[in-house]
Amino acid sequence: RALYPERQSLRLDAKGKTLDDKTTLNSLSLNRGRVLYLKDLGPQIGWSTVFLAEYAGPLVCYMITFFRPYLIYGRNADLPMSYVVKIAAFCWTLHYVKRLLETIFVHRFSHSTMPIMNLFKNCSYYWGFAFFIGYYVNHPLYTEPSFGTIQVYISFILFLLNEYGNFSIHCALRDLRPPGTTERKIPMPTKNPFTFLFNYVSCPNYAYEWYAWASFSIMTQCLPAAMFTVAGFYQMAIWALGKHRNYKKEFPNYPRRRKAIVPFLL
Image (cartoon, rainbow, N blue to C red; front, top):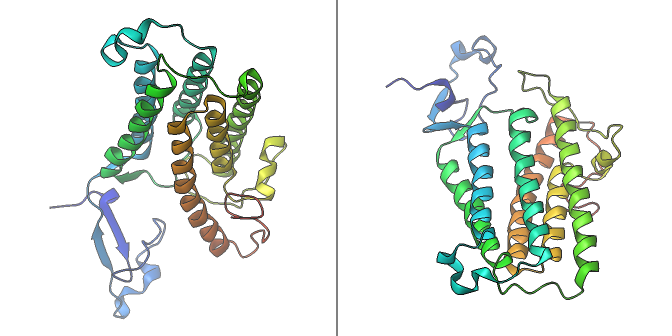
């Protein structure tokens, strides 16, 4: 059975790195006894399709709990809703609508596809946490934060600033890659002041992301939100460290003082 190109991984070593799409057969000198290995990557799905699914789901799951269906909350469903709950719903909606719009209009992917199993894995993570967090934040018996409006509004402002910072980094990364190419350059700060984090970390988009969720967790003072923040930071730290290593390998002049995701530390 013929494999479509996205399922194919061509390598010079059975356990080696996949060859770049731009590599030609002539440049590999295969006529001199070298062997070319082909690995089947399995069924693939487009990155944008996965992103759209994993970001649309949390909106639906969270808003189901926001509207407090009797089936979930019973007789308590009609209790008054705290202002914190409404602000949290705004923040949640803003984040995932931003993600959806970025997927459609901003992101330029270096790879067109990923394994189809990632769709189920990613959706399970995002959708599950969305319902888990939404159930408790939107619960009729939800308790407002300990320090009241000061805690809520300061955290809310920090959330908005970090969301904009995350968007600014995504735009800066998009501008590094011409449309229709997989070209890579060293990310550097732009005229946008929110891109200053490029001076300190390789992946400021991840940094702003976990700052935003930390702000959301403090604002709601909700344990499931804090768990989501910790889990997200752990995963983003793994991604950031990998990208940081790749940057240093690919660019000999890569800034040495940069860390991966946490300035000066990690």
